[in-house]
Amino acid sequence: MKQFLKSAVAATCLMASVPVAQARTAYDGSWDLLFVTQSGACEAAYNFSVNITDGIVTHPNLVRFRGYVTRSGAVRASVTVPDKYASGSGRLSSNSGRGTWRGRSGGARCSGYWTAQRN
Image (cartoon, rainbow, N blue to C red; front, side, top):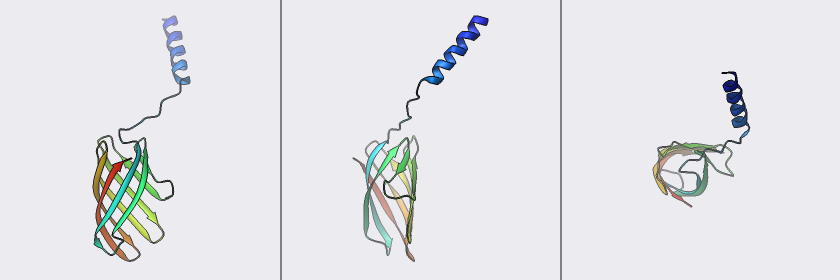
């Protein structure tokens, strides 16, 4: 029993020193997004790219951008820039996605749909 405990402790220490591989999701990578305004006085369309790493959606130039993707592909995100705010939800598949969004630009309220294509 004493030898078993020593082996178990040694194995645990060895496993703790092995670097853990980063978790990846099926949606990780670069995605091109198109936001289309269907109602409200916002611009007709917005295009930009985002990156997904471990299910977290980020944009390199937008500090106040938050988003995540679940393992099933459900996505939720929001962005705030001076005088503008938008949030949306939808679903990604392996190479594309779509959903809806709502937001405001100045005093105008807007809404529409978005599509995504993997780069």
